[in-house]
Amino acid sequence: MRVGIDGYPLAEPRTGVGHYTLELARALALISPADHFELVSPKPFDVAALQEIERANLPNLLTKTPRASSIRGHWWSIGLPLYIRRAGFDLFHGTNFDVPLWRQGRSVVTIHDLSALLHPEKHRSRLVRRARLRLPLVVRFADRIITPTESVKQEVCQRFKVKPEKVTAIHSAARGSFKPMPFAQSAELRKRLRIEDEFLLFVGTLEPRKNLLTLLKAFAQINTQTAHRPQLVIAGGEGWLMNDMFAFIKESGISERLRFTGYLSDEELRALYSSCKVFLYPSVYEGFGLPPLEAMACGAPVVAGRIPSLQEVLGSNARLVDPLDVNALARGIVELIEDEDQRQKLAAAGVEHARKFSWEKTARLTLEVYQQVSEARA
Image 1 (cartoon, rainbow, N blue to C red):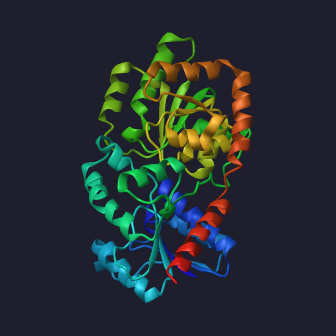
Image 2: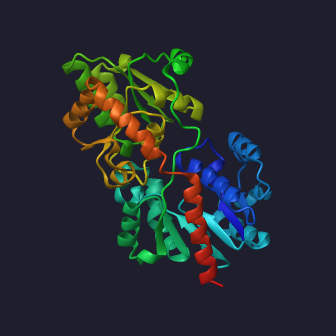
Image 3: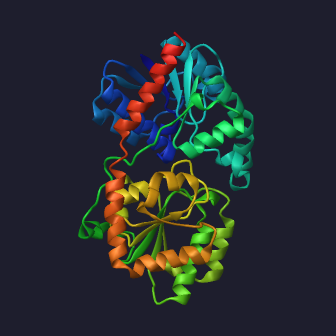
């Protein structure tokens, strides 16, 4: 098969969808050398992503940036459909919620979550409008839909009245670079970032559904009502609609115990995952929840929100709490800080659990979807 893959998520420094796109494309090319895979983007690829693709040295995985810059503003409606026809793809995989709405070929779309539809108040209005207009069309036009969890599959089927057989839930995985690192090995990075030995960690884009305001309230409670004074390290790019969070930081007096690192490389994240006291992820909605799985792979004990997707992905290998209950979150954190034995048990269980997920498995299941689509339309 000749498969086109949406490379647009790789035009910027990678977050969740970008990591998914690159890891999936690389794993597909590795397990299926007879097939041809091409990442296509109207904008130049991020240098770091290109370097990783080149290092993989896979002759059946290419990157293409169509030259005509004038089509970028109409990429999905004009530019990409024309390029797909010219390239002769047997199938196009939209890895970021979107496929061309021309019926010139087979297509698969990955819908990572329905956050913009289910929690519109937590997103920019422009994104919500696009999701409301575009997603119903994408769901109808795509030959098959991939979701990262069974919980998102159920949401897609219910929201869009889609038959379950059209949707396949395929788990993602932590990247192979995430594995335990000796505590001393992270000392230089922690010194550079002014991170103390005792710290809690959150990783993710700063946006409302990550529930950082509740996390900060729980953290403030820990600092004022217990004897513990850990730092809270927040690693991730600044997102949107976070004025309430910053206002609380200013009025609560906890700013001296916070460290905002911004975007970090995988090796830097690995160092923090491996050396944090507890990893925190009290999200109120996720499609999959990659950061807590990455943290588990590095041996961090995890406290996360008790929501369907995280229950599915993390199972009993994390401490799950009501993400909107400040007291429950604070209590769960303190109990782990004070219980070395429980922290070690969760850490060991998490490492083993993370090994059950792999990009090779993700790619094999995705390739099966491609083959089913190809046979159905033959």
